[in-house]
Length: 94
Image 1 (spheres, helix red, strand yellow):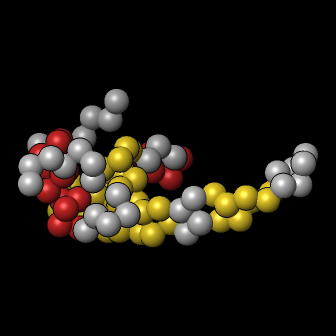
Image 2 (image 1 turned 120 degrees about the vertical axis):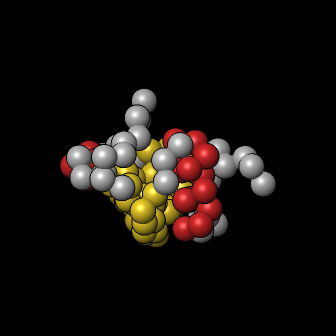
């Protein structure tokens, strides 16, 4: 299987993720069934860099309440991956 575009959904751009980018750690939202090996292969294929390490975190779903109406809902969870690169390697995020 050579199509890895469905594994990495998009980069996760937050304040914490931006701080980590300086030290070569990039954060991605990934498919719920993706494994570390799948993510490693996808990064190699799409960004032409070899990850040193991949860490996966399951983001839990959260209950939320609308301030004005009081209606309750659920913020969907998911899965994110921290991709550690070798020193000197970078990924251009557009």
